[in-house]
Length: 198
Image 1 (spheres, one colour):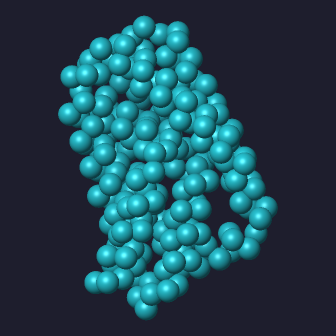
Image 2: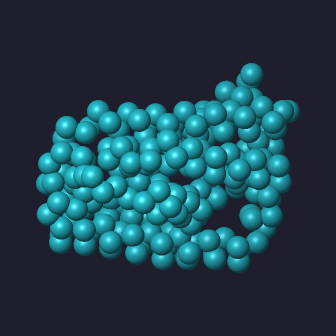
């Protein structure tokens, strides 16, 4: 039980940091678009990465600077492009994202975006595979630690996705979406440039 709680606490504290993936989940929750699928994909992706980290891959990544460098630059390009896109949307479109819009994003497009925010984000690898993977070595039961870390991911993403609905009245105004797009764009650009300074 101790290992489970330790894994849960570490994973939850790492996920709490504001990032592009969390901003995307929040946005989908407010829009009520494919929320279950988005939350499930984020949590399952975390689960796979945590298992890989806890059971050995974290060591491989930490010992290969080229792999880390490739991940960092790939993440920079993705975050930079999406940040510019969000800022352009905030500037150019009056009603780009209305909560009760009858033309939601295609499910396939949403799935691809969700996977991109997860798998092209170097911080996900550093947090789950390297950090959680290395910390797990301190505990007698790697499995219990990993299970705790995975549980934290599921709790966080589903809470974020569905709790976002309480903000729906605010985001029925186009101006609110402009502000959100601007904030998301700025966060993504900051994260993008932070990656190449890592």
